[in-house]
Each structure stands twice: as C-alpha cells, then as structure tokens.
Length: 355
Ligand SMILES: Nc1ncnc2c1ncn2[C@@H]1O[C@H](COP(=O)(O)OP(=O)(O)O)[C@@H](O)[C@H]1O
Ligand SMILES: CCCC(=O)OP(=O)(O)O
Image (cartoon, rainbow, N blue to C red; front, side):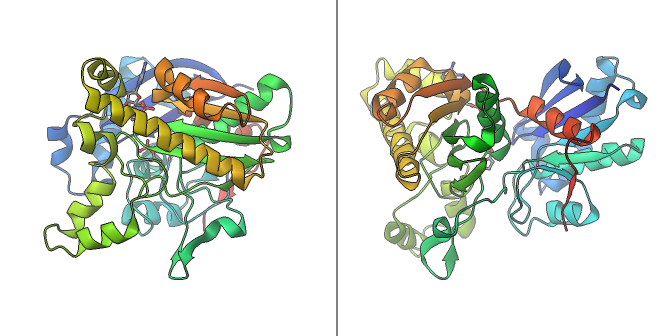
C-alpha cells in the first residue's frame, strides 16, 4: 500500500512544504512571506488561515488533488515537554498551540495547519518530534537555582533525523550509539544523544547555548539583570535581544552567514565575530562530550551553516579530538515529517496522544 503525505514546516518568514509518495518527494516549495504580509497579524496563530491558503494554492499549482492525500504532517510546536515520536493532533494540542502557554514559535503553526487541512479532508494529521522533545537526564535539569528548571527546547526533528540517518548509514541502531548533534541554522542547538535519547541540550529558543545568527544564547545573568532593571528597555525589547535580534545580527547587522563570510575577507571585526561563533559552538560540543564522559561515537554537524566549509573546518579544528565528525548540511525536516507519518500509517509505530 502506498501513501501520499503533505508535509508542512513553518518558519518565521516562510512556510516550507513538500508532498511525498511514500519516501519519494514529488515536490517541495519554500513559500516566502514578506514582513508586510505578516505585519497584519498580531499573533502567530492568527497567520494560520493566510498560510493555509498559500499551501492549498501551491498544491493546486503542482496539480496535487486534495483527495489524493493520505495524511498531513506539520512541524510543531512549543507544547508541554513530550517524548520523541509521532503525535496525532488532538484538541488539547491545538489549544496549547493557539494559546502558547509554553512559548510562541512559528512551528506552532505546523500542528495548526496540519489539523485544519487534515480535518477538512477527513484524513489524519500529525506532528513529529516537536522542539519540546524532552529526554533530559535528571542531572541535566538543574540550572543552579531551584526556582529555575532547565528545559529541553531544540531542533529535535532535524537532530533526530540526522542521527538516525547516520546510524542507518553505518548499519547500527540509533539506540546503540552515543552521538553529539550540532544544528546550526537561524537558531543553534547541540544535543547529547545517548543510546537514542537526548539526555542533555538546552533551551535554544530563549537564552541557552551558543549564540546563533538571530539569538543571543546564554548571557551572563548578572549583566542581564542589570539591563532588565536599567529602565532603558521594555520586557519585550529584552526578549527580542535574546531571540530575534541577538547573536550575529546584533554584532554585525546580518543573520546571513554566507554574506558575513564575504564581508570577513575585508572586515576584521566580522572575522572576529565569526571566530567567536565557532569558539562558542565548539565549547558547547565539548560540554556535551563531558556530560557523556567522553564516550562519543560521532559528532554530527547539520543545518544551513554546515554548508560552509570555513565553519566545518574551524569546528573540526576544535573538536575532532573528541570523536570523528560527519557533516549533513541543511535540514531534512520535510522528509523526517513524511517518515514519521509513514511509520504510523504502516503500523510500525503507534501515534502518541498529547493530553
Ligand atoms: N553555503 C553556505 N555557507 C555558509 N552558510 C550558509 C550556506 N548556506 C546557508 N547558510 C547559512 O545558514 C543559515 C540559515 O540556515 P537554515 O538551516 O536555513 O536556517 P533556518 O531554517 O533556521 O532559517 C544562514 O545564516 C545562511 O547564511
Ligand atoms: C529551538 C526550537 C526550534 C527552533 O528554534 O527552530 P528555528 O531555528 O527553525 O527557529
């Protein structure tokens, strides 16, 4: 039996979609949304109908009859902490994605879009490995103060997908390996994958880990408190410094690593900032190696920035003494969504229920 899956990966400025016949991609498209288009919506969930119309238009343009779809699978979202796997969209999930009690992120739209399109067609809708996959070991939850517990919010979908891809390529089960996966895109996350579970990572969405193109990562807490109470910034402005306007953007005015690499040829300041980015990412990989007591089979670099040879070379220079390095540039999120839905449709896995 063959299945046709519509996959949807919403980002802050685009919605990536793909249609798969089983594992074979029929097409993928990156639907860009301008700042003006999105400015008409006050909240992320309010963008759902606008993005849905564009998704349905793209299906029409690619001559995919809606009745030919077997299931819809979206990337999402910031839910309460859950274990990895494929989740059926439920009313409880939709309520959380709309209200955002655990956080707001464009991926919240993945579940909302999947559910709306799926229920109109009377076909199942799912999400797979949302960013809130939480498999942290007990010790990894300690922050340093009992009022603050560390959270696992990371690029779970792509990290798990590349880790499983590596396992498949070397012919071993994912559950038998110790891997450090480093995702470098608009956000950056580093995960310690021990025998199939991400036992340590951080909140890559808000203020933990290395800085990224648009996020500050961990900041010295005393200095941050001083900024918060300086009277110069609103709460929203501080939050934007941490997520959206932090990291490479704050230092250089750009989130585009390719552009920055070009500028670095003649601009010593930009060269140093890129050097600091590599240094900070490498330190996080080292921290995960320590958490794994040095028992690391492989380090995997992934995300858009892993396309850059300078970054790959710089990181190898810092961390290849820990373990060999494999590079899977870009992100396989659409295929990972299709595979997650297929495992359930084929009966290889039971869809989990978000309560
Ligand atoms: N060939 C490349 N070399 C270096 N950086 C690259 C290359 N291609 C893309 N990037 C960088 O990857 C980043 C975007 O990564 P991506 O995974 O697409 O992010 P997201 O999906 O989170 O928006 C940008 O900073 C972009 O400049
Ligand atoms: C860390 C949560 C997921 C995330 O940040 O994704 P993006 O980098 O795509 O925004």
